[in-house]
Length: 106
Ligand SMILES: [Zn+2]
Image (tube, rainbow, N blue to C red):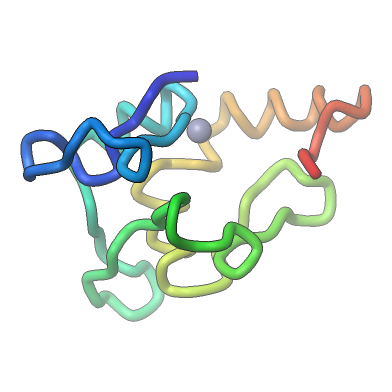
C-alpha cells in the first residue's frame, strides 16, 4: 500500500491524518492529483470518493464473484473508472484471492 493525499499537496492538501489514506499503488498512480472526474453515466463532473468522509458501502459494491467493484452512486461510478479499479490485473488477482478465501474484505 501507498499513502495517498486525498486532496493533493499540489492543490493545497495537508499532511494531516484526515487528508491521508492507504491506497494500492495502481489506484494511487491513476488518481495522481485528480480530485474529480466525469461520471460515465451522466457525463457530469463528480468528486472522487473520499474514504475519510464517505462510507464505501454507500458508493460501491462487489459483483457476484467479488472480482469487480460496481459503483452505486455518481461518486462510486466515477471513482471506479478514474482509478481503473477493475483493471485486468486486479480482477485476475481478486479471483485468485476469492478462491482461497482472502477476498472480499469484511
Ligand atoms: Zn487499488
